[in-house]
Length: 264
Image (cartoon, rainbow, N blue to C red; front, side):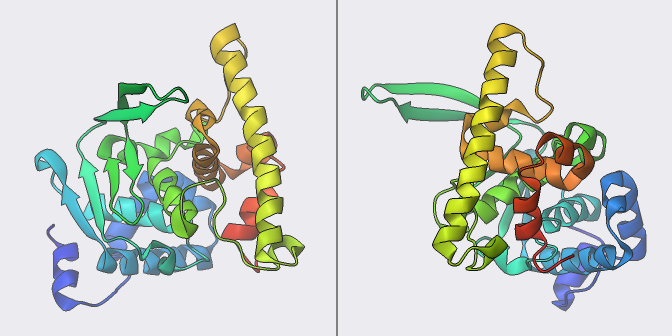
């Protein structure tokens, strides 16, 4: 790292992003302009605190600049704007790749047969481990917002989902969430809606891919599992709320209630 980010680490003080860096980040990602003035001020401060608590590493010789780190920090802080950075306190490292990564996977099917396959990744979040991101996807998030795509928010949504264990499409919920009498009831109510919306989306994806039906607006990767559906939904919710509200009206109260608690 170099420049402002290096200097601020030596000072060990959390400071908001410098004006020039902040303005260039806002210009790169126009969807941030939907935030109110107080929200933008909070996001700027939160991003500075985020940078003071995380360590960035460039893979394959990729250089971590102030611009790279700020781009990740600002987008990663969107989901926790009202929740706080404690939701990200289970890890420190963020690895930035110069491009997509091919990961070798091994799975066992129901018959006990082991299968090996390659998966192309633009990002990955490890349970209580680092987050990996492809810089081209991070950098292009301004242009891809129309499609509801954002790799940073996707991976950090997984981090939020995993706070209570394995990713299952439901983050930890408090008693009283949307009127539920207990945390257990809140979870049941959340999953009832999320599962229904996931199954409907999966059906649309299958029809589109196998039978030439209309392509889904939301990334079809969300049809892989309910936890991926949650992460993909969070991407669209934060970068293109208007389209998301039209496509997934049933999910809007859930995400509003969780990500914006006590907000009108």
